[in-house]
Amino acid sequence: MYDVVIYSVLAAFYLFIVLSQMLVVILENRQPVKTVAWLMVLFCLPVIGLVIYFFFGRNRKREHFVSRACASQLARRAAVRFYQGGFPDVPEDYRPLIKLFRRQSGAFPYPDNKIRLFVSGQDMLDALLRDIAAARHHIHVEFYIIEDDRVGRMVRDALLAKVREGVSVRLVYDDVGCWNVENEFFRQMEREGVQVAAFLPVRFPKLTSKVDFRNHRKIVVIDGIVGYVGGMNLADRYVYSMDAGEAAWRDTHMRVMGNAVAGLQRAFLSDWYVATEQTITSQVYYPREEECRDILAHDHEPSVSRDALVQIVTSIPTAPWPDIMQGMILALMRAQRYCYLQSPYFMPTERMLFAIQTAALSGVDVRLMIPESADNRILTWATRSYLYDVVRAGVRVYLYKGEFLHSKTMVCDDMLMSCGSTNIDFRSFERNFEVNAFVYDRQAALQMKEIFIEDEKKCRMLNLETWGKRPFWTRMAESSIRLLSPLL
Image (cartoon, rainbow, N blue to C red; front, side, top):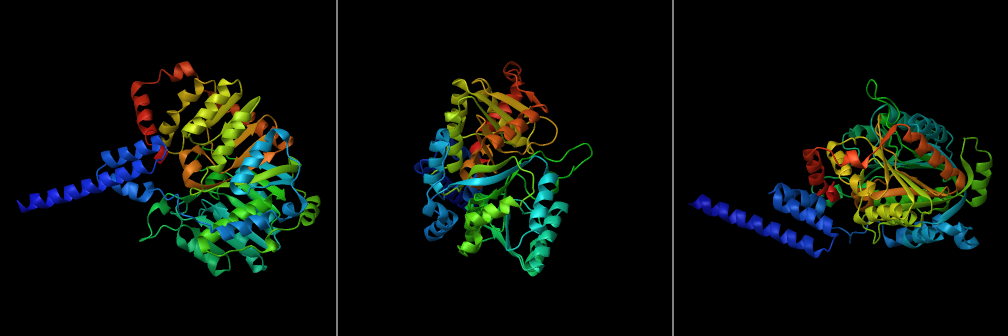
């Protein structure tokens, strides 16, 4: 009898906690689809659902990772010459987009940049190692994943060599992205002089929603003049074939040289502040325009454009607006002829899905390229549940066969292209720290378009009629997983 009373009290207490958390979820006024998803988790998964919500579901929008003073100083340093000399001429068709990014996060349009695109991990790694070897003052490195493998050790050894030459080296890695990497890998770099910081480390008793706010950015800044941004991490799978007959992952990365590196520098130093609480705003990290121009003249790396206008746009989960997602939506809605998108995952927010459908229905040639299968079966099912919605609106969906497609790019109307770390999914748009370069340049856009068309040769185009005839249980599984897509 006593045991029954104890169990009844515990059950009532647990039910009270669950119901109170469900009430909190409702009162937070999130998007309805996310609210319903969390209510399902709390109601349908006893105990486990509460644990999942405690770690991943609590709304932390009020948390500020970067102090206003630090953000203001970094923004001022990154764009000081534009305050003094006015803003560059911008393309008429893209002024609203450029203004949107400026007003939301202080992302300034930087002129006179040299751009090179990489679709080969080996080419990107070779160029990165050459630029690291040429560094004179500082090297800033930030990746979601840095593996202790051939690629990770090559970059590590190159950084250590520069430290011995007196170059300042800082490195930020995401604590969750590098969970499977032994601490000794990073400790060795620290012992030899590299300043290393883990981004929002997950350690008890601080294991809360920090698990959910991850730094998905991939940034390298060398001497404030050369930068890298895109989708590639530092791991073997981006460069080497992992198994017999399986090629390295197909991804896209970008090397930028010139004024826009100030935007990457600002992003890195913001994350450095989050990871270390050290504010770095010295002007030495932002070379003057004439210095950039002089080094550009002596750079012999191949490029697609030498005078591109570039905006470096970041998004953080606690910002009032989802900057990158809103920019992609505006680009879709203003596209006149075409807009091509690549993403390894496709779980769009309602707003993004509506923009894609609206653009296609208005006669814009919208194409979406995703992998035939994602690197996770659950994510594959969730992605496929959205494809019928876009195909029936007139979007051409290409399923990339062979190696895993990890590229996150966009190109519109032979004038705008974007390359960065942002997937077309809820997590990238709302829960991760992300960065994308938006490039307003005809030559760069045409090359990105050419890359997309070349990738089409390795794809099969989804057919609406045959897609609708998939087995019932397959569609049932996909639709069921879709209910949880805001949480994946």
